[in-house]
Length: 243
Image (tube, rainbow, N blue to C red):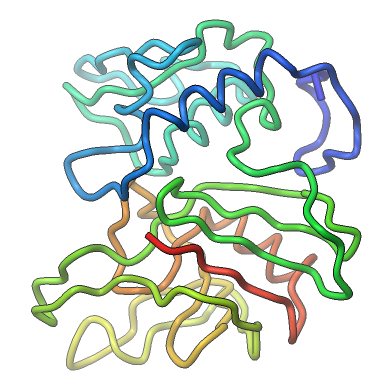
């Protein structure tokens, strides 16, 4: 999909993207371990072929650095970040940003073995999810922040549960946690989609480029809304890959 004005996530268009795929493959070889606070996804791409890193200066923002909305979305999704920039932060940028599209930087295969169910694959190592239709075609992908290695409030590891599950219930924009913050609950979980007990996919303003949640899978709010309203139904398969 080389038409940068094409509506995302309508990725049915085919494009010549061999170079982009090779770059992504090379970058992924450099990083196979989970990412935690202090080590953002984009930082591992600084020495990968096809990418460079820039250091954010005072008062710079996503918009000032990347005025073009599509370019900005490419860079944000590449870095798995939905949080504001601050001075000293390093972010990865494709060397050929003008000709890079969202499918070029997808960490998922364009297709998987078809099944009779829609499927969402979450990869905590790649900090991303991929949504596949019943034909096994990738129709959307985006950044995630899964459970972190240690949560100080509960004093234990709080990784997202791994394995294969199914969405069993979902709520809209007003969904809130019944457990967090501890003792009172009420943390916003817009467009939550529960797949196992208290584990859910949901929107969040804090998708920081590393795993930082209590166990749920945080998504961009727009991605969560799209999944919740246009893709997910009860029974949608959810695969959480091992860390």
